[in-house]
Length: 142
Image (cartoon, rainbow, N blue to C red; front, side):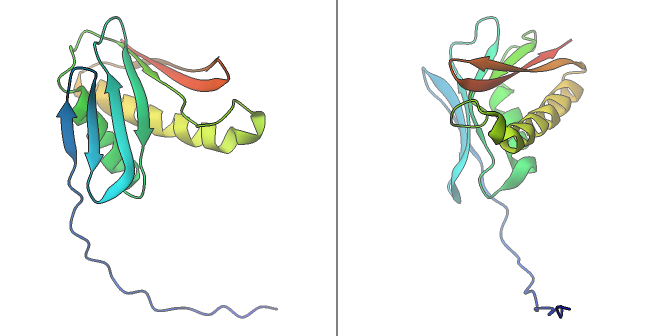
């Protein structure tokens, strides 16, 4: 039988991460100087749906990612009800990548619920779509 060894854990008092939201002609981007992998990117111009081409929590986690997403979509028209998250599990669409796809979908559903609550709407549908070998998630609010 194995012995369990408990290691002391030093409490971390990391300062809260700063999120920068920038807009240019092509996109709205939310990033953090403290984590180079953390990234939200929404393509512009927005027509009939909001296209989210990057949605990665990095080390900062889902809550920071969702807050950054909400900050990035704050400038978008409230009447747009469809959000397309592209290539949610980078790499080819493959059943063996199910865990990554499932994790991404859950993360996107959380973001959609918070956005819907903020806009006094409901999440009507969340669907997985395969497009050119990539997995996308489409969210519809109503």
